[in-house]
Figure 1 (cartoon, helix red, strand yellow):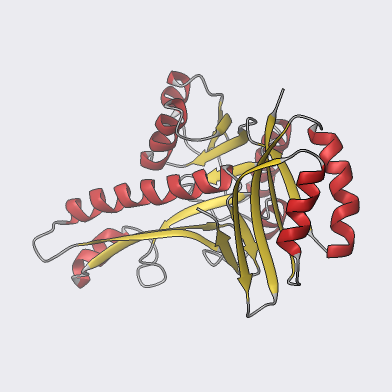
Figure 2 (tube, one colour; figure 1 turned 60 degrees about the horizontal axis):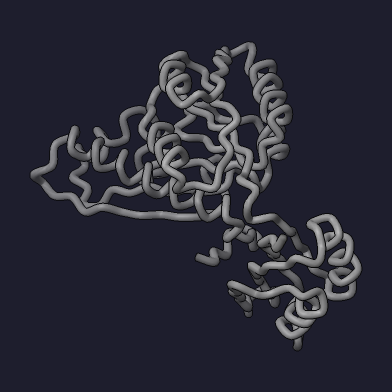
Length: 282
């Protein structure tokens, strides 16, 4: 039976890369269904995503043969089976708009995820988790017990085999060590007022300053707070007639949509890291 695979890679740019990859697949009866590429002239790197079907080789056989193919070309690559949803853990605190949106999209078949667990430092959303039949783990975070809480969180993430961790408005700063362990597989969402409106009630601060744009940014988590590679952003226009409640509602809606797009692209292996930036093959 034919399977669909997704090959993504980056490497130093050189002549004949597309020809080499298509030739490799042709020799193995691979049929290319979708392909996208990008040459970064600033770094000299080449990025590519290829979706192809193949009924001759298994995933493990293809991986083994790609090892030998990739070495002389210096490919940093990964190979995934399209039919396999991405094992995911969601983390949340007291604001549930992003959590609720992701769960609904997942159950509606709009996200290629396998949501294995919800982790929270509060109890607010245990009933929501139960309604979707997702295990809920309440792990309080105290000033003196943060390292123990993170150890428990990481234990759940690893036990569930999570390829993706989504901070769906999880309002705790992760330690440098946890950020390193989740490198490239944790996505955060925040309002785009940062760094202008830090701290509590950013929409109140924005309203007080009479902003004309509100927005949201989804990015990968790094030890540099809110400075990881950006995946997606969006904005909405507002004016003097908008109340604080209007700004908050509009902002939450924007956050939910931006995070959902970032999660969707990551789960479909459309996001490639390029240093402090990303390449998105939509």
